[in-house]
Image (cartoon, rainbow, N blue to C red; front, side, top):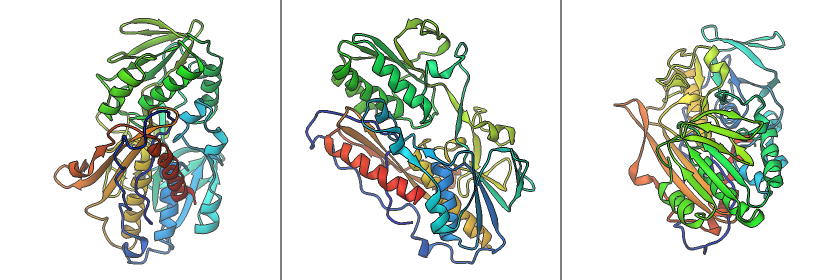
Length: 432
């Protein structure tokens, strides 16, 4: 699989301290052996896999199924021909990246690995057959289905048009809309960013976006304030760095409030009604609570304790509700964070397991994954966080390895530069 190690899960931008403030990001190699050392039993030439979703998890599993199991017939079903990366998309808000620079397609996966693509919408799956029914009426049949449908958002009472209070947590039109709203905000104005109850996509993401926007507001909208409403009891990850950034570095811009739950909103007056009172703002970046995409729920795969995500066997990512269906990425319920890097890692574990299963073997009994995020603290500086996860047979889950988990001691310009390099490597590993 090469030597892809650590990659940003979020990505914004930054601006200020010396390059030496943060310790080096631990170098990492692939969490699976090179393809030449994987299970060597030949895959059944009739083995067919349908992959639903062409984002970070779906594109990766489709690629590596073909790379490691050449005899496996892989069809990727995706609604859109272009995938826009959520990773690095906060930089679009500050004008440091274009949305187009985050666009990726599946052309190289087809030409280099023989992947088949179908651009259509999946309306139903039969987890027993298994088969997939498309909006066009076509029915695709396979030996296994891999679902990587991503997330959906809870409805927020009063939010008729999401563009009025965009989440921009799926990169695209809402990202552009939020950027326009921020650009039009008056100096001395008030912006609000909400953080949903965990788990949600990219744990550091809202905090790094807050830091990035605070730095941008300081420069471009003097006297403005950014109020962060966090539904969690406190900052959920990289606590030391984000606490220092919120209360010291950006203390004149950010006002952080924890344990705040949004009850409903009034888009006409740009007012949020919370369990602690009402708050009006010039711009609202409203990030709602998240759950597995509707297709996972309608297929009977959402079965975790929260009723939001799909439980899986992390040795193969087979659904505990339907063993011929595998669920990877943000839609799955695991002990690992929901992030682009982990989605890429889960996809490789899943692909390896399927190649082994089709060859008459069993999944690797001790998979290892890594999770890493670079977080923009200013428009030119970033911090980083890294975790290694190892399979624990007693709990049948992926547990963090304390000795291989850590965060940078601060932030610096070098990490900001490396963030872009790692992002480039991750996207090449996924789409090229």
